[in-house]
Image (cartoon, rainbow, N blue to C red):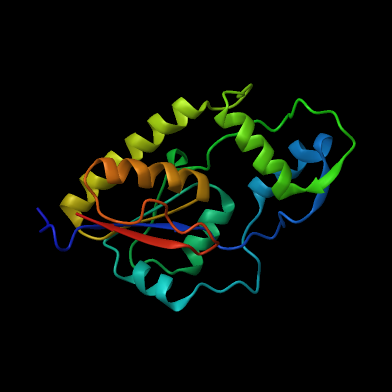
Length: 193
């Protein structure tokens, strides 16, 4: 059993992907854009901040989403132990077929924000509902808690949306840290007992 002072869970958001959310697309092109984004790795010139790499090097256990951008981020951070890769750490699933057949061109970020808003309002055809995403985040928080209690510092490399849900569950379980994890690329937020 690890002492409470050494148990920590760090949530890291992946680095900047090769596909930009500033790309201007129509609503009909959103699904194809999301597929490209899901397959993207990290930009070649994107190097992790030293502080994030140092946090990774102190980890006794490392977990990563199975998405290419998270795996590539994990590799760039050079973990001291082989990462445990699991699809439970994937990004939240929001609707990619939007019910707005407008020929309007907006940034992919705008379409993503709209899709997430619709998802939070209960629109989730063909994807994980908000309730299911919360259940998944709760299960992940419980897993990370159990591992941190046994192994000490634990790091998860994942995605902005799921990290927010996991952070909420960690705080419910008694972990201390920010209400919202850092959401920028390479965002690194640590929670302690």
